[in-house]
Image 1 (cartoon, rainbow, N blue to C red):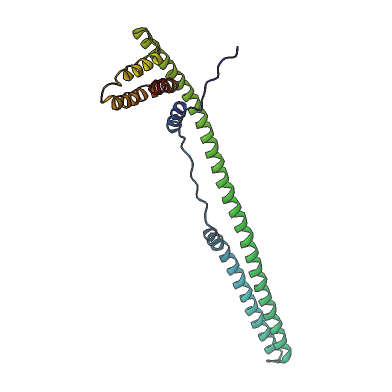
Image 2 (image 1 turned 45 degrees about the horizontal axis):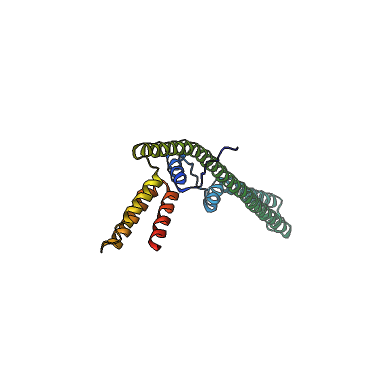
Amino acid sequence: MSKKQTDYTNAAFQAIYEKAKQDQAPQLAAYTPIEESTLLARIGAALRPLYDRAIEAVSKNRQRASAELDADAISRGMGSSTFVTDVKQRQQNEAQQDVLDLEREYGARLSEQLYKAMEGERERQLEVEKFNAQQINEANERAFAVAQVLYSAYLSSKRKKAAAQTAQTGQTPLGVAVAQARGTLNQAGNPNGAGLMRADAQGIWEAMYSERPKSVLSALRILQGAQGK
């Protein structure tokens, strides 16, 4: 004959389990990801000075090359010839292209580093969520084990209390409930009998509900059957 399985779905066990979960509640980690705008500002603050210096160097090189060209032209007696003007224009165009290339490079590096930083924030948040889920799962397992022990002690206490009552009265809790119900019915001839029966029936329910709900239902069915006779 198989051993009867303990019912862990009833209200008594669930109440014990919920209290155990509160007692075993873990300390969870908290992490707030850095916002995209903040990351962008930080990365830009680190990169922008590098490119500003590079652009400034391009501008200075162009100015120096232009001054050297002017000095060479004057020494040759060419002055502001069309040739010199054309060379200076080419130098300026090249400098402007260098600046555009630097700006494009800055934008690309900014986007790349922002993407990596945001990925890092998402990964850190996921790690924290996984850690918290693991902590909660382990805490719930500990709480369930504690609840099993406490529920077993609770059932043992109920059995001992019922045995003591039977030994004292010679009746089981169900027998006591039935006797009380029958005693109530004997007062039916009293003008206040109906009120007494309702009061006694409610008293039986309240007295027995916490001990043995099935016994109470049986007692009340007996009471209702006797009233119908």
